[in-house]
Image (tube, rainbow, N blue to C red; front, top):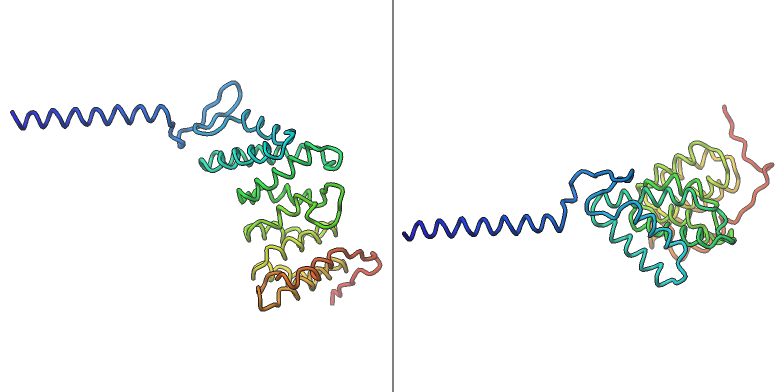
Length: 259
């Protein structure tokens, strides 16, 4: 009887565990479960819906208090940490929202706040996929062209890791707008490191705009320090920073010999 009793008790215990597990599964859906579609909106199990994320971003842009905006930012940051899928959804919707927002950050305060907090979110999430957005909006500012900390997209790109270097290198390689290249140099110098240093060194010989060339040279010279090699040290930062205020006449462009 005793062996039979033990066997029955074991079976009963297993059944209890199965029941508990099933109940937990109802409360906490598996985040790897395939997404579903309802009323035209894709829903990812364990994540906020697209409508909820969009609503949170709208409130982030229009809230009347800094406290509420910071709370919303924290909520969205926590949301992104739930899973890779949740992060991807937030980053995608945030990029889309920023692409469509009014570029007048001086008069349109919701646009200002969306860029202010949205760019910080993208930095925290290390969203390198937002680099195209940042590069396109390098010149976006809140009415104060200089210093550059009034340029949310520029600050965001400069705050990225070395994973952002290929996109910045592409800006230099394809030529084009002088200001955009100058901003790319600024970001590369801010990121620093041997890879960024090599990109700037390689570009120096072929750069034709005097301002951009001066910024590259100043960055490379600032990298040569004992305190923080291959980066901009605090003691060199002011002198290096003011280099980016330059305005060169087109007539001063350097002619590159083809011989």
